[in-house]
Length: 330
Image (cartoon, rainbow, N blue to C red; front, side, top):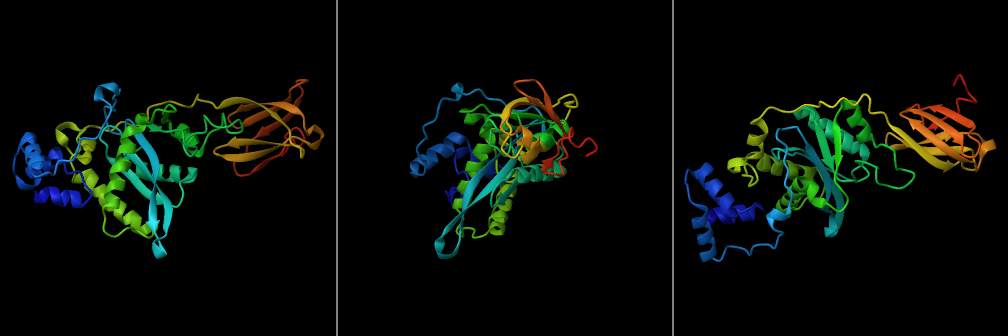
């Protein structure tokens, strides 16, 4: 009973499986799950079973090897400021699908595309690059399902994955269980954070708590979904890691778009997660055009006549791209 109280007081799982694991690994005592469950029930410490869909209704999947697939998502957590005012911040997580090992988990004011790429690179620097990634369709990860101006573009993260030869996977809209491993971890993390007696007031304080929990989660806590209830760290090192093996050199980024030249003679195109302005010419203002994009090469054609109006070789160091037909040496 004391062990259950200690686990629950820390915001950790305190069911029969977890209690049995701690008794065996930390106290050298083997007790059956049924005995523990009966004892908890007798002491009125067994909570009601949550209502869940039958396990048979889910299509379960798990990567066969470490670094075969990484999942990522971000969630919100409040900071307790002066006068108990709450300020929202965001926490991004990278987790190995095979072992549930948390590769990186950091707190930020707001998650941006640059932070996604930076945290991905930091996790890869410590653990090696994965063969593939799985995320939802948030715009920091992909713009494939978003508005006309964004559709067909690539985020910084998508561009980086192509450069590294890493396959990108995204969940289907309305199917949140596809990224269920990382989302379940986030629930467990926030449950533990809320159980702490002193709530964080700043990002460094929150990050210190997150780091404490990651150590517990990876190394000191059994995971019910892993063989023999082992820890994620044990599962992560038990098999050889997979490395990126996808040849994406032929994976060119080709797209077409119908648009209208604005009144200043320009078009806007999203490249590498940011907006680039294409110079067409004031003489073509309000002209309907067809935009042909092949990686960083762009051609703009008059939709009605087929006349080539502009050519661009995108320079990612500049937000404005002059028309090469007007400036052939530029």
